[in-house]
Picture 1: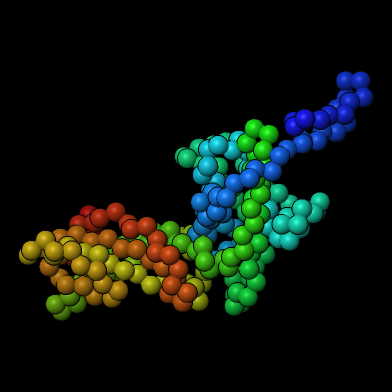
Picture 2: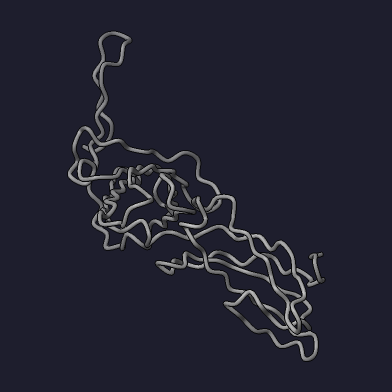
Length: 220
């Protein structure tokens, strides 16, 4: 019989054991959970998106993938915004070349069934910066020089953790939309927006900033 088995001494609960059946499902890990790191700092987040499961826990390292008792599990809280959001910490140094893969194990319960999946990946594979900030536009001869600041959540120093920016802009003359990896763009534009990514490993692009009307030396 599946379910929870408890041991009591009078009114005192001594222990509890759940007997569950392993779910026979072929779902890929990537279809169940999405992970993202805003920077190379010691934290990243994962979101479990399958609503059929009522509880989820995640663990890092071989102790978790092998079912060891010393595994430190991070458990799900309240279902919100289409998933369980979980925050994890790692011990990788952001200042050395990444040679060790993260080993993430997920366990989820649905009724009296449990699903278990393990995935190995590099931190750089899940890095996606937050959107950057457009500071101003300055005229440089026939062009505009766009100043862009990294997001506040990005790793520091910025001279070491460099970002590249892509600018998307709309021309005033014909309304055509173009993109540029250079900070210099044509002067006669009506609006622009930017996004960023790690320039060394070419990580996933950030989300675009909102469109901004282009005004010399300022943005409105």
